Length: 318
Image 1 (cartoon, one colour):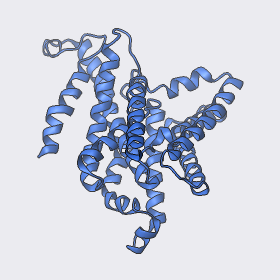
Image 2 (cartoon, rainbow, N blue to C red):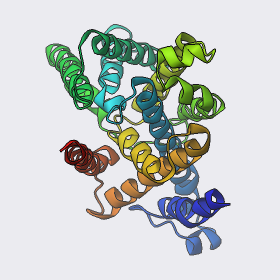
Image 3 (cartoon, rainbow, N blue to C red):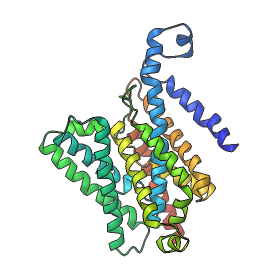
Image 4 (cartoon, rainbow, N blue to C red):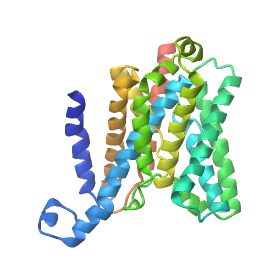
């Protein structure tokens, strides 16, 4: 009941506001008056953009939750573990070696690179004695920085910086009908994550404990990493980098409702969608008629929230 109330009171008004916010005049009155141009803009641009925002927000929030459970660290998410940067390297590889590939195959290549980057991050964690939970995101940010530097070097070397920037901005302004359908994979992965929610909860207790309970820890890890990689790749290929979303939403929901994924995952998905919709509306209105990309707005909010979590953790340790 509370979940339905959240949808009606928070998510639905944001979705409606997203449909009628923008440079072009699209309103209920123009639609009722039979304005063909307004109807075309609504169908071709506003509806696909709103759906893309919802799918991207819910998918990235869930992906961040899964990464936090598998890494057993509250500061981990795709943009603090090198996953997003690895997907960007995959996109650059496709642009250099096979620019004519269909978008679906580009997503698969980006997903493979994202999976490889996440596995590298986890492998590094196993080899380093971690005395503080703050070391985990620090390692991820450094790994992401190295991967990003490699990507930037090759993009500069082959004069592809502008093309790469267009893929990695986190901007939904170019989303039109026919250019967001990859995000249905993100939605499918979100549903799959909910189906396997109990397994992820048990896996988050550690390999030894989950194995003693009869859980195939390796399979659950593979499933979780596959979901994270596919979601990250579909979002990056469709709209670019959406940072810190998987950090903000899971932590806020966990503070309120606890860590049982079967219960919290719908809230995480819907809250992620609501946050991205709100950031997109802010980006479209604060400097109208120009737009501030969603990735930029989320970067400001997310970095502030990240600092809050760090200070909160340090105050508890003191």
